[in-house]
Image 1 (cartoon, rainbow, N blue to C red):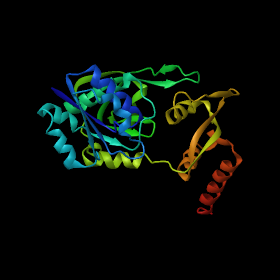
Image 2 (cartoon, helix red, strand yellow):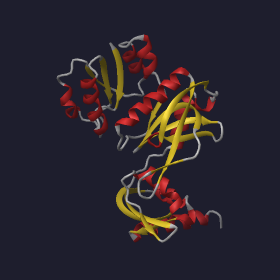
Image 3 (tube, one colour):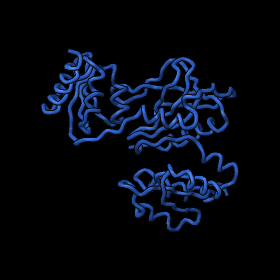
Length: 285
C-alpha cells in the first residue's frame, strides 16, 4: 500500500481534502500530521472515522525525528517522496482540485531533479485569465505556503532565483533536462530564503479601501484572492476593499508601490501610513 503524508490536515482546507482523498483512493494509506494549534480541530475529521486507511498523528512538521519516524511507515520510494522541500508560513486560503495535481507534478520534478515547463497567466480586471506569450522554464526547488497562497521557489534562466504563484501556473510538464544547481535554494537555505521572503502580517483586522494603478491588478489578486472585486476608476486606476491586518508590514507593502497605490478609507489607516512615511523621512533629513 502506498502512503501519502498530509500536513496541517485538521484545518479548514485539510479537513476537506483528507476525507475526500481517503475515500476516493482506498489503496493509499493517508497519514495526517497536524500540530493542532489555533486552526486545527480533530472534530473536523469525523468523516474519516470509517476509513481503515487513515491515521492521525499530532505533531510538528519541524520535528525532524518525528518525520523520520513517519517515513518508516512507508516504502523506500514513498519515504523519499515524503522528504520533499516544503516551507509553511501560513495556511492556504482557497485551493481548487487542479492545484493538487500541479503541486504533485512540481514535487515529482524536484524528486527527479528535473526542470519543468509551464504557462503563466495574469488576472484581468474581470477575473479572466490572460496568458503570457511564451512558455516558461524553471528549475524547481521547493514549495511555500504563505497565508492564502502557494508559491514555487525556483531558479529561472531569465530571472535567477524567483517565485511563481502555483495557482497561476498551468500545463506543467517535467522536462528531461536536469535542474540547474542552486545552492541558495538547497537544504536549510531553502527555508532561510523562504522565511526572509515571506513575512507574517499581524495587527487589527480592518476593511480598507484602496486605489491602485491598473497594471497592479495581479498584485492585488495575488494578495487578497481572485474573488476581490476590482472596480475601474477612470482609465488608469481601480479601487477595491479588502480585510487587512493593519500593521507596519501592510503599510510598507502599500508604500512600496509609491505613487501607484493609495489608501482611501478609513482615514485613520491613511493617517497611520502618512505618519510612517514621515518617520522614515526623518531618518534621511
